Length: 389
Figure 1 (cartoon, rainbow, N blue to C red):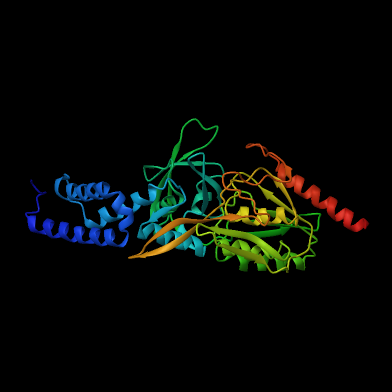
Figure 2 (figure 1 turned 120 degrees about the vertical axis):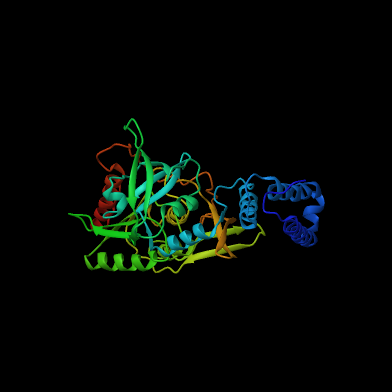
């Protein structure tokens, strides 16, 4: 047996002894699991030993351990469960806080491709001409097909002033092209609102749910109420979700007192998140589409089940499972699917989505927002009926 050229059999031997001790401890703690799979356990030891001793290049222990953890999670076949290395975990935490250094784009996965849901005004992405619907095929030369969102976000974010190359594909454009971007400090609002001209309808768009969203919602609602808002058009289109607690707090504005969502755990116990009943009590239409997912579906599903408003648009994405983020130490983390959520009527929407009350398809290259038009039309009717009564 030969070892890679570091001149130290004893160091490898000590490492293998330590590995064997760790694996023995795991065997004792979860003996039932490994008693059934003792051959696979032996293969694991062999693989680690062979990589450490026979692979062409030296491989650090940290690299092997990270790879093993990543492989365990990937073996679940769950695209939402991800091992987060320290850099990716830090990026996820920045995303939850809502302030970060990056490019100013909101992205999601659509048909295995990293797709731009929005490019915020005044950001590097918007200045470079990146638009909603663009597909990011490569990040610094790395193939982005089937990439998980946390990894993609981790690659796109970085120190302010550093550069990154994105390869962009756009429908109707024959060939993809490369865009060089310089990262900037990004802090974009997740809630925007205005009174639709010529009406008393307040238009509120929520791009995602972060820790800042409830506070931003408070501010926008107060502003619109001061302008005599009498109805709400809530836009959850292209909202990929985010923090569960944030969505529940926002639901207080729209959902009557009672359950907003049930969390159903493997153990069989349920956890209920409820509205406090301090909702606006105004006519409400909610716009949704195929990119409305996760926390956005929690809110829209609660509004539909309680008949607090009318859903308009296209069937939602269908992500009805909940991920918990665990701190693993040394800066790493684990995002693991731990439960499913059910709407107030206990509908399981995972991989099914929510069908809107009024279906309105929005053609990709339409020059008019047909879904918004329909929402305004319905709210004007509701306001008319209310005035007549």
